[in-house]
Image (cartoon, rainbow, N blue to C red; front, side):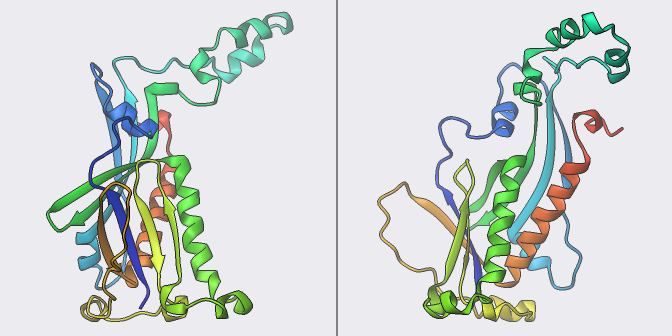
Length: 236
């Protein structure tokens, strides 16, 4: 039976792997956040909601706020011989189109574990790669020559975020069908025992209904982030 497997390192990385975590953990800084809880409408989702939650986050360092670039109207009105000077005066942290370490956008993912909950922070530019995994998994069964050569019981595809969270989709993609919420947890296969010499990881599994649930949460959060930016962090 297909399932969603979430693996996370028992201990977070010593150094931030994302802009969002670096900003939220920034010392001697007041960080303003604007959150949007990603939601999926549908029946019998309460059990999944208790296992996995995703929040879109905009964060800005108001102690050292980002410098604003010149207004477009002002640039257009500038004399031709002053245009280069106006551009040169723009803050260096705008060079890559971002606000350097003063602004970040991404996700806050909460995962229920046996002994509590774990939080993982994700940058916005990681979301497309994660969504691509879900799309690839749904298409896998359509490519019959490759699909038939696989052991359908052990089909798997995964994506690892910078902070160490790995989202894995496992099982036969042809069995992605709807079941009652009370049944899906009973049909899950046991977690495979695999010798792993890397750091210890915490693992949780959601039933195959969790695959579409997680994908929908990521899509909802991604859409909100694409419509909101630094200018809207105050709710304007």
